[in-house]
Image 1 (cartoon, rainbow, N blue to C red):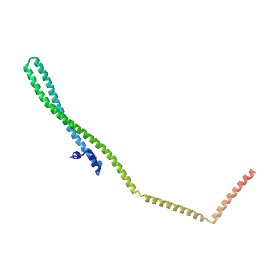
Image 2 (cartoon, rainbow, N blue to C red):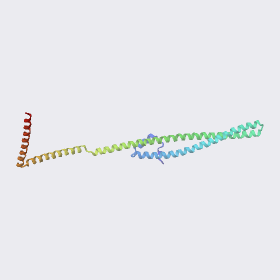
Image 3 (tube, one colour):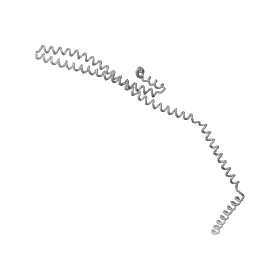
Image 4 (cartoon, rainbow, N blue to C red):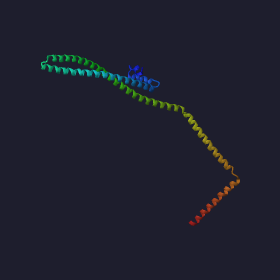
Length: 224
């Protein structure tokens, strides 16, 4: 027995409540939709069969109604021709046709009423199926959004801000330490120069200063 048949006495809002409380609402919704589609196919067959019965009695009714009209006309023709026996026979068949016509009309009305009710029920089932499909789209969107939010939350939980901040601070301290070591190494390198190197550097500086002084003096002479 399908879910729809088991829950057909529930309102659609009750079904929605059951789906939303389910562990896997998408899966339950898909199953419910499949059950509704199967029931809809059965209902369409039942409506088609009932409509066929309705049309059959309508046809029989129309045939007898036409026969009543024809026999009435023929009875008048026979009476005008003073053919009493023929007129009597026409009236007898007319009455028999009227009896059948009324019977078929009653059956037609009853079956049409039943077919109309089934048409209405079928329309309601189609509407509910459409609503359920729309509900599924909304559930899928909500489910995906919740899933994404959950994944983000889990990622954020795994991301330790204090740990990251501590790691950055340690990196800065390490960098400062390396810079201090480089500076100390440079100072040691300068101290490691020989006395000859110092004097050679001093002589080099003196040569530059002497050349600069001569250059300046040259331009001072020109300006005078």
